[in-house]
Image 1 (tube, helix red, strand yellow):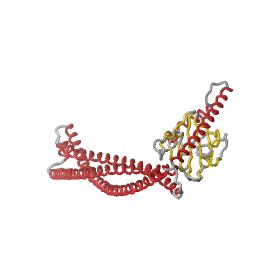
Image 2 (cartoon, helix red, strand yellow; image 1 turned 90 degrees about the vertical axis):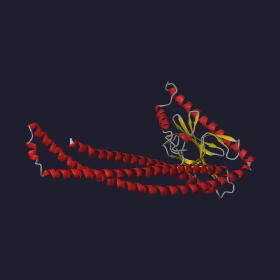
Image 3 (cartoon, rainbow, N blue to C red; image 1 turned 30 degrees about the vertical axis):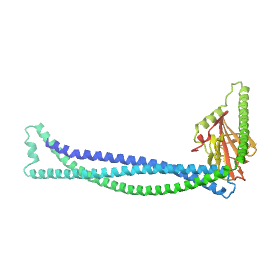
Image 4 (tube, rainbow, N blue to C red; image 1 turned 45 degrees about the vertical axis):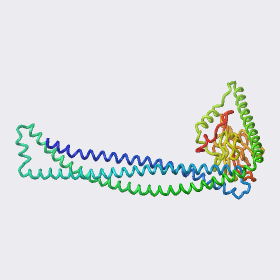
Length: 430
């Protein structure tokens, strides 16, 4: 019975130690999850900073142009949006960092307390073990294990005494091992605690750097917004000219829209005629169906039609950058880029038509089964009608309007007669 009391007495501190170990592991897992979140924010921040750098480069190339235009204003506006998004990312990073610092501090306090508690338990364990060993040696002179066994009243009692002596010896040996393991575990916790303290210091330094970066970005956003307002004020004086340009733009957009619809109608008519020849109802060929399915499955994953670029005009109804109350509708997206940038196919398909839009340059329409992609604003075309292309194959070179120094590609996606927002199809086209 006394032996059982000893075992219970020494097992309780070990159970407590295991509980602290589990808590510590839980903290490490939460810290790992925080690190993953930080990595995601870091990637997002790098992506935004890369786009800011590209828009800055585009703006610098046209800053010398005395006739800063609407295209310049659109790039400037995009840069402001990116800088504001970067600020939001920095704020999230700082917020997460503050929370993690608090969690780390609380964990350090708990860990320090658990170490103190375990040290007390260990000392108690050592003291009780020492008393047990002392009592054992003290009684050894007055006790003979052999006499203890043979003095049993019967064989069954003698067998139980042998088992008891073995268990007692094993228990003493296990207690020694447990004491050693407890000491090692405490040392390990101390090492981890020191590492957490160093990490906390590092996180604090990172926080200060982020705050510094945030203040710098605030200043540059303010300057960029001021430049934007000055340009808006300047451009607003040319209302008559801009309204004339807007009407011309709307005409070109309608010409492009009509041409696309006409080509799609011809494509559908051809497919219907092919089906009728084979005495079948109208439907896409198995090859076209497979291509359509693949195209649809790649929504949000399609490569950009340019290796470098930034969306300066989104899809759908848009408010005019200068004149309040004036709205336009964009059938696709406009992507600003560098001069002589190569234009490439966004997916496998066939070149259905190459045509010219006055004031906009050349345009290419590609067939992807049910889907069509349109690339408008090219100065050179490197493909011909009927060519079967793979994704990212070059189809031409983007056109630059020298007066405004505007280099933009207009890109559209259609499914049958329905227009789609291309930014939802291209990879990370936010």
